[in-house]
Image (cartoon, rainbow, N blue to C red; front, top):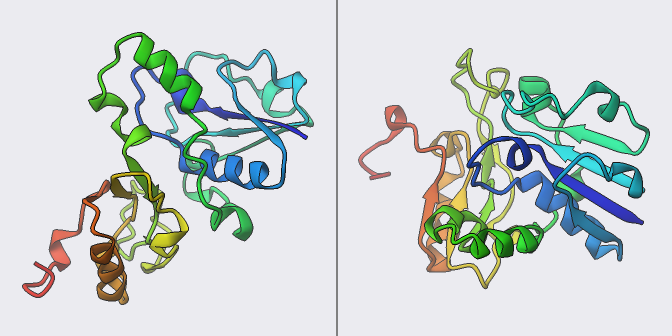
Length: 213
């Protein structure tokens, strides 16, 4: 099959500079099964593909009017993400959720950015980082958050599931890592990797103890 993938945030948000994890997992899943996967940079070529997956993280994406209801209703189009459904977004299927991300999905786009002399720092998350969720969920119920219906933080993916040995650093997208009862065991696996890491969403200082520091 010919698979097309659209990172709607990259396509429509000016200066957006962070890879779409769901898109990379979908790409990895289909490539592993021998399918052709292409990252698309417009909506005009959708009909050329057997399946097109559109992923959107931010609800503000789409203000250009290019991503229309007509496109979303096409039989070969599948779309998802918090940008479409906010706190009601459906998770990926288990086999895709636990798929090694395709860190080469953005390679051609990266080549174009480098040709434009875009700084390496602004492209660092595409080039230098393995990205994933060690845990998911939060107990805070903040009304503005996509996790407002979540009740706790639980283990999600083991580090080896998304860590690329060729990537120098690790980036975690966890919602509230320290709220997970297994945080210490999980963190040990991170430290054992020897790679520098960051929690992109930060850590909840309200529950940090002296032991955690």
